[in-house]
Length: 388
Ligand SMILES: [Zn+2]
Image 1 (cartoon, rainbow, N blue to C red):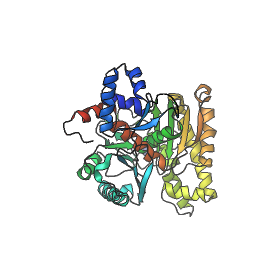
Image 2 (image 1 turned 90 degrees about the vertical axis):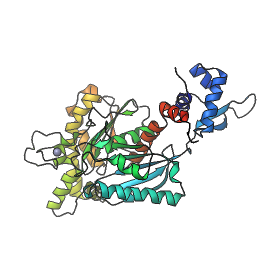
Image 3 (image 1 turned 180 degrees about the horizontal axis):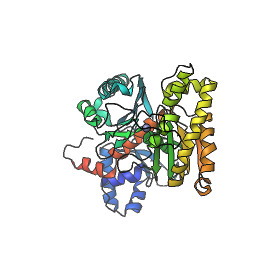
Image 4 (image 1 turned 180 degrees about the vertical axis):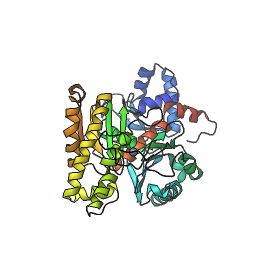
C-alpha cells in the first residue's frame, strides 16, 4: 500500500493501528519512515500521543490517537419549519448549539442568512476563532444532486432547486461545505452512534415530508441523482384523487406525511400545520393524532415492504417528528405481512434513538470523513503553506 501521512492517519483514526509498532506491522514501512509520518502528523496537530497501553512495567509504547480537538465542525440541519445549528468536535460532541425558526418556504437566502448569523454567534459564544472550523455540513429536506451538491427538484422546498448553498456559505466561511439529504444524514448519525456493526441500515424519516436514508457498509447510498430513498412521492394505487405538494396525485406523502395528517386534524378542528405540530399532539396523547398516525404508519409500511425486499437491511429505523409507538406499530402491521420472510427474518424495525441530534452527528461524520480522508490530508501536508 501507498502509505503517506494521510494513510497513516486513516489507520489511527479508524482504530487499525494504535502505536508506531502497529503502524510498521500494518504498512510494512520501516521504523524510520513510520517515525517521519507520525512526526508530520504530530506537527500538524492531527494526532496526539496519549500515554501507553500498558499501565506498568517494561517498555511502554506510546499510544497514538486522532486529535479530536484539532478543529471544530459546523453541522446544521434545515427542516421545514426550523433549523438546528451546532458546533461540534471531531467526534461529533456538541460544543454549542442553536435553533432558528425559519421555514424552508421562506427561501434559501433568508434561511442561509439565518444560519450564517447563527454560526457567527456560536463562534462568539464559545470564543472559537473562525479559522478553527475545518468544515461545514448542512442537511436539507429534499434530494441533493451528488455531482453539484445542490438541491435537485426538492418537492417541499420552493425556490431551492439547484440553489448554490455551498457557494453561499463559502462567501463567509472559506472551508469545505457538504450538503446532504436530511434522511441520509440522520441514517448516518444513527449508524455512527448505535449501529456501527450493521452493514445495511435504513432510516425512514416521517416529519412534514417522508424520506429514507440508506447506509451500506458505513457509507450513505445516494443513488445516481441523489434520489435514492425518496419514497415520499411513490404513487399509491388507491388514492388517485389526493393532490400532493409535488403536483402529482396519490403520493405516499399526500396521505401519510405530517403535512397530510396536520391537514386532516385541521379539518376536524384541531390546529396543526406541520409535522412538528403533529409530533407535539402525539406527545400530548391527542387521540385523533394517534389514530391518524397509526393509519399513516400502515401506508408507510406498505411502501417500506418494497424497500426492505430490495435492500434487505438489518435495521430499519423510524425517525422524524412523527416517530412514535403508534407510527411504529402501524408500520409493522403492514410491513411484515407484505414482505418476504427472508427479507425480514433478521430485520430489526424500531424507533430511531437520537431525535434531532442524529442529523447533526451524521453531518459531522460526513465532514470529518471528507476533510480528514488520507488523500485530502496528504494533499494539504504537501502544500508549502500547509498550516499546522
Ligand atoms: Zn408527491
